[in-house]
Image (cartoon, rainbow, N blue to C red; front, side, top):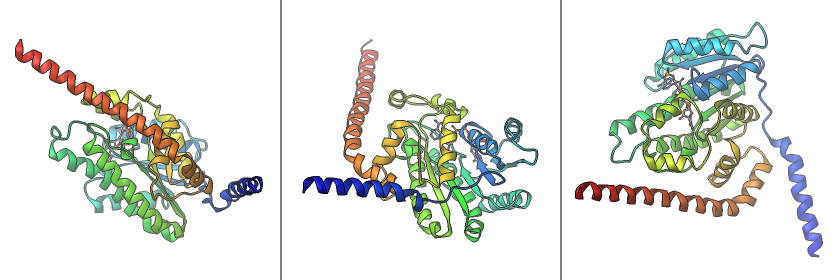
Length: 332
Ligand SMILES: NC(=O)c1ccc[n+]([C@@H]2O[C@H](COP(=O)([O-])OP(=O)(O)OC[C@H]3O[C@@H](n4cnc5c(N)ncnc54)[C@H](OP(=O)(O)O)[C@@H]3O)[C@@H](O)[C@H]2O)c1
């Protein structure tokens, strides 16, 4: 009897794996597609643009600094696969004025056609202890990391729904999955993206529009180098428990997941574990993904508790060292 039940269970799981691809979204064809990348002049955004260009897409790069945009355009154009491909540059601050963002998206659509994929990658990180961060930093990070993703998405969504085709990618962060020492302002701005993305996916799925939320780990970019200049010791030590990724590797994975219409995009085994652990009520785009989450949850929570314990001990050690040196300074 037990053997029969086990055989039935195995057959059921196998069946689910077999039908899983049938209910997954149809992959988006990138050759000839119009891809808009905010933050496309540097780091992860630039590598995403290169990856899409290599697959035959037409690209609109959006960022503020015009020189950096032109430099990125030249670099991307080296990867063309046909002589029809175009890289368009638009200089705008995506976090300030919705009407301005809507206008530039309209201009891009007039030149290169309706947007097939929007990648919201413009963003920044500032770290520091909660009481040391200026209140204006919280406002700035919400503007750029959250509203800077809302505005471009709002500008493309109606056409995507009408055409019954589209992908919107939100580049969050692993710090948008768990709150870490020093990231009170940054984590909150990246957590907000997950709520936006989950709600939006439910609205647009019937229109064949798929949302991807990417959770990159520490990645070797100009933005990361800038962030490191002011990172508290505790944040740096916690970050150093995992390795730093190459932006090309991160971009490849994000583009692959966006094409497939996967809701979650994570990098490496740490990223996979975090995404499974923090999935909550997030949608899944394949039965296999859902099954994996159900099966691995207990194991991953156990590993996560070990990580959290080691992070707590890093913070405690730093605090004790600081107190010791303060006492030594006072008595000297
Ligand atoms: N690198 C990491 O370790 C890491 C890890 C997790 C998540 N992320 C996220 O990945 C994204 C890209 O990070 P990155 O490290 O590649 O950064 P980066 O090298 O500093 O590039 C940021 C890009 O965003 C643009 N940008 C910034 N503010 C903008 C604004 N208000 N309006 C329009 N464009 C703006 C920048 O150009 P201009 O300055 O010229 O506007 C630049 O093109 C960010 O959202 C970041 O939070 C990064």
